[in-house]
Length: 333
Ligand code: 5GP
Ligand code: MN
Picture (cartoon, helix red, strand yellow):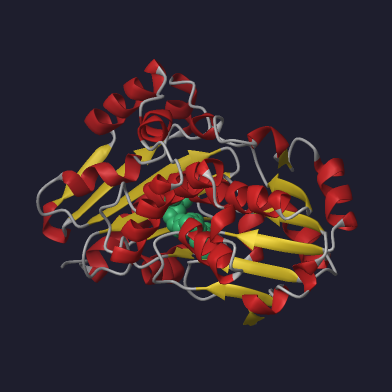
């Protein structure tokens, strides 16, 4: 993969730019995609941001969100946009399988693909890029990209709001180890450019439906198991739970973190029985590597302390298998 600076010559004149991110996009996915979109629009490019699936409600306030094409809802428009594009930017994922049903569209696109991402072990699908696993978020890398292009003065409160969203969500509101001094310096710069941070916290964290709050209550009471001997917690959500609480996209976001608030628990897992299969999320504190764990056992990946995966077995079998693995490997800090 060539350094991202090698794209600057190509971007000298207005281009058609296709920007995309991962399936089930989170704050960093949408924040980084829209920050880059606003920046490129200011540089007179024609930009189409495309999400492989629907944007969750808690991000519907993001400036310019109406520009985003949802591939699942509008595959023809998204296909036309990629066919007409001169260059493709891939943000917050590094493995084409993470765009799910859009994978073959991206795989067969002949235009150069540019990666901006902070996950471990990028696949060799990208001609250019910046891939730094130590970075807090893809939003931090988009900020670095704009600075590398000597365009810091183009960052305004709108771009700042998009960037802040991704950094805030990916650092657990500025608490994870990847939240370095440079991250705080970046936020200070955004604040001097007019960023209003309080409404962003309210949009993202105080916008729950009553049903979502009740789902969390139900799940913590009935569906959370704690294994003190392994310093581990497990939450399981069946299809019936999803139906009973009318769960919407984004409603299960953050649930996996709850067991980590219990003293002594440093490894947490969430297993959800979704319509399209069994989805798993893993989080840890300290030295237990959930990236390797999800790669080794559940066909996934991500970061050292936050990863995801899937299972081809059914819900109950997956839970049993997970518990077997737990008793075999004894995760402990
Ligand atoms: P989440 O649990 O929030 O879905 O994902 C946690 C982290 O792991 C995110 O950074 C996400 O991009 C990554 N991740 C989630 N699922 C997968 C997967 O199936 N494969 C890979 N390689 N990474 C994943
Ligand atoms: Mn991210």
